[in-house]
Image: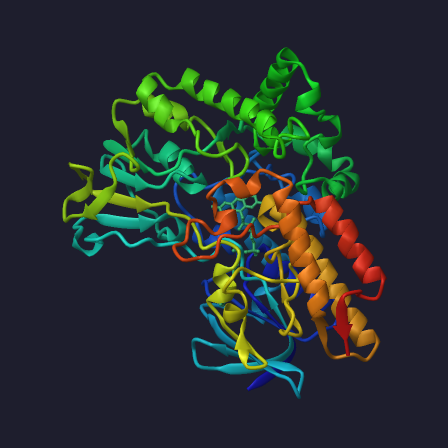
Length: 528
Ligand code: FAD
């Protein structure tokens, strides 16, 4: 049995940076990763068309200024192979792989209240102990795999976007079905439509998608590289951890309809996820949101030739921005191809999978390949998959009615266990790179503080946690976010408690608050 100062679970962008920072600070630290290499999301999600939806200039590490100057992103929104290569390059550059056990899954964490140590059990049967455990397990790392009756009867190929084969899958000339029209589904559909013989898309909920206007990154990189530190600092203070020109946004309610239309168009032409920041009240005021939603629906109608298909592709059951928005490159136009068809499973539910294909309503759709783009058990899935025990209870039991954390960083009763981009932090509502780096820095500073003061243990006060949970819920209730049956709410997982999980108050506000907590000697935490 080995003993360490800290064990970091996960070797995605969060785990890699956490390992690096703790090692540099002189801690004895080990990483454990279920996958065969580094990269996390970008290691697993290798489906055709996979790419980031936040510009790579921002969706990248800021901790290594030389790397910022050296790494040439080829596209504004890099594709998965390039992002994975970047993660691998960082691992090589900082010599991180040697301290990570790959192909190893953490199954259990057991807190020893007398020794102030976690016992970490992995699926190869080994146990280690560590004073601190940092869960860098990812918010979107546990796929949701709904049961489809008859799936095992299907004679063709089946793939999940979230665990696409490393050797790739040749879909050219085949009859393909894609189930799911969230971000992964949209990207897959757009990428494969030109090469497959036919494509049938099964949609439960249509997505709002904003054009990417992707292209070469060279010019933008040159511009930003001249002032990267200031650029990053602005991102850290911005609402979503990236720059959308927030300060320019006015209020929809104070804007006349013609000006509002021009503003929506300006954002639409800029492209990307900043669309929801066209107006400050867009995610708070139903009327403002409906105007923004209708603008997108009008664009969809303009792109899709068949009005019936256009109507099916137009989201009407939830406000724009309250489910994860998508960034697209010709998704809607895909449905103008003769070879592509759309099945709305609200009208024609999927009844079963047969050896030949998928039966929806009264129709059997015969296909050679089924692609499942059915999403993730978001935010709590990876943590709840580990048997985390402390003081006679498990984290899973504590979180049965929804996650409870202080600042999304720790949970009362589970000392010395930190979560990176945990529930009740801005996390998935932000540029994750900004949020990851902030949490890693905060946690590392806290561990250094404990060491410098000869302390061994850190844990949130129950009252501080209760207040934070209430604050998170209250902030969410000020917005339209809880109105959608989204994965932010846990609504995609049967039986999961519906509660808005991320902190919706903005990255900059959150940072200022957490900075203040650290400066005030970790107010709300008990340090012993
Ligand atoms: P992950 O990358 O998910 O890594 C977590 C790692 O932990 C995984 O490798 C997993 O195998 C490992 N792990 C989990 N549990 C265990 C265990 N028990 N034992 C051992 N190992 C374990 N975010 C953005 O901000 N912008 C984007 O453009 C963007 N695009 C995305 C596209 C896709 C297809 C997906 C799925 C997500 C995207 N995200 C995006 C979110 C993305 O998850 C984060 O940006 C980021 O990659 C998360 O890094 P991470 O290290 O926190 O988690």
